Length: 450
Image (cartoon, rainbow, N blue to C red; front, side, top):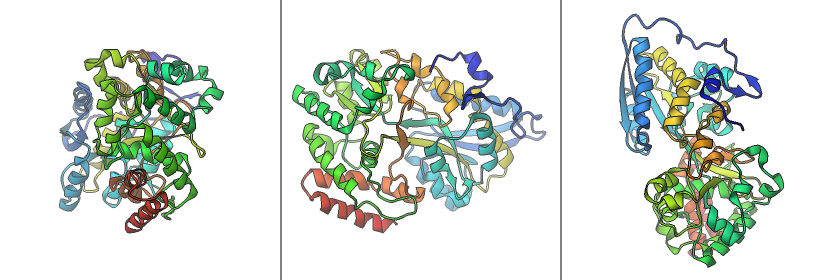
């Protein structure tokens, strides 16, 4: 994808090869400001990228001033606080009007959220459809219970050392995953399989730079293990709510993990969600799976290592290439007294001029769920090395999923929150259980959820 100037982007990104229709206008957005000041309370997660939240405040206040709306903004420090806050507000039937939800949290409260079909219809007519994962999380039984947002949304690509891959595995990452999708060699990319990765992992281990990722009750364990299992054809629960964990695909994935863990650090079973970041930053590891946050810290603390990090596609399994993701979405409580203003506010945030500013502020960390927003040049420009996060945006055949997919989102959320897959893997790879025993244990835990 070639570079796009700010002027070109703001004129209208390209969706499906055709320019976005300029005639579509959001209800109320171009009308005069409200004659009487209305009030909105909103809750966002405070972005970890320094300065990003300041840009968010500027954009929100610009809209508020234009429309004679008084907005109170609350920022929570941790995304895990969202569910407890939402639960408290659900019980009290009061609190914020607009909330940022994480993955399936909104679906858990779908009966108490205002339908946002009009918002989603407006945005999709203008920018094309939301991507598959965003739709899975937000669209329930014909209703958009939330709408996807790029804010804080992220995925878990491979984060690999250019020098160590070249020296010990004979893999040129810049050639395999260049900063121009059109220059990819499909034959080479197709050869980036889990077998090829396992071979590389052995070599990294022998050289003293093992691949490291947690296998524990932490979110990062879900975010790399769940997609890996799907790549082998293993899903815990299917889209209809049937338990499907007891399968040949699950056994194949467990056997793969039994071998892979022989070449990983022994402490991975006790790692927390930041341990894999520290592992790659320390220089002890050849690769991990993570958003660009570890690389961003490296830029400040270990620029020598940052200059060698490359973000790229996950390996492909017998059933496809999958990458973990955590998407955020926005919802409006049904008891909101100013639903029209709340919807117009969300529409404004999702428009390309505001998206442009927010994506730039996040320095490439945030991942949009509208393909036209991929045209933003931030992923080509960030470095060192320049272009390291170009492939952080899925450019090829990877499918983004969240742990628990493709189960109904409420069930998927519990599979994720109870760490069924990481715990099963830990039991099988430490010898606590045989692969079949671990699989049956997981089936029993899923029975409790379903």
